[in-house]
Figure 1 (tube, rainbow, N blue to C red):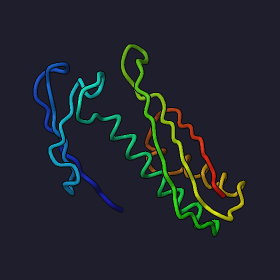
Figure 2 (cartoon, one colour):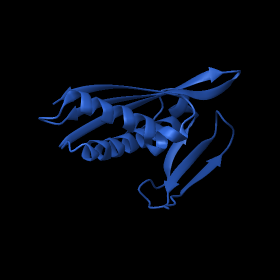
Figure 3 (cartoon, rainbow, N blue to C red):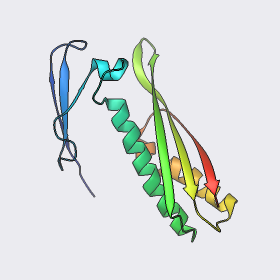
Length: 142
């Protein structure tokens, strides 16, 4: 079992307030976030951007494992993730996470690589955590 931590400080109201995010290992330290960075084109970060980063990272690691379990060597996995925040039932909700992967695995069987992508998208821990539609697309260099 592993445990990870994060700490958030928030001051003010939803639109005029601001916050700071830090992780337990100080990879993020006092990173600012607020309404503008979430709903407008403001600087800094926002929760959905951090979830996108976590999902892309988790999926990439899971895909590496799935490929290895199938004896596929993948010298390069590049993953983008797009998180969609929509109004749902009068409130906001994350409704979709779309993973886009570029996989370089010379000599691999394409259908076996596709199975690995499907499994990683479904079974990575962040996918299991999210309560939204999870989609993916892959570009293969096999």
